[in-house]
Figure (cartoon, rainbow, N blue to C red):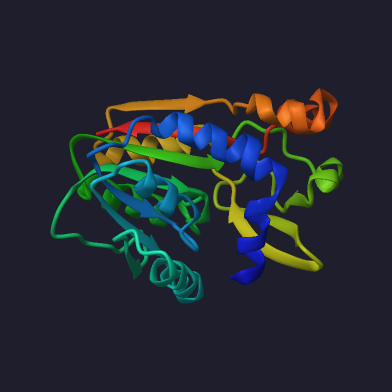
Length: 237
């Protein structure tokens, strides 16, 4: 958990991921927000600081939630955190917005993917939005040693097979951490979301913060942005 937390300091996280995600979330002032796969609260705290009226962060990892709660105790923002599984969650009150930086591609099979989408829909008010950063289903499926310059690489185990493993290796300071995501086609995501009741589904390309160009130059970003491993996903109930 601590190692993964350190990866949020990378240029990619700051100048591409966070910049893209913030643009997709838009104005959250006065909204109730459920932040799924919240980890140590990196985006949860940003959403709350941007004026959301109520924020609940949920993650399946007790270790990640412990880190989030430590930050809340040190700098209280009135955020509530819970350990929970997005495929099984139930909430007494619905939310205006569900945010999820890296969630759906952890479903182990199509059934669990559908369960996640169904639970997310049940957590939203009519007209509510899901905004997510997700594996890019249209990235050519090969191994990406070129991404080592950005501190990570990924390996597809069974290209083109829904639910097949994607192995990630990521540098966190002096530590190497490994974890698995899952591959799903664009159709698989859209079918699961549609079956859950989402009527509008939009895929969004990555955006680069101009400050990233100022800090590292255009050439630094080309290998990543020319073949983006992640993509924005928005769905309206």
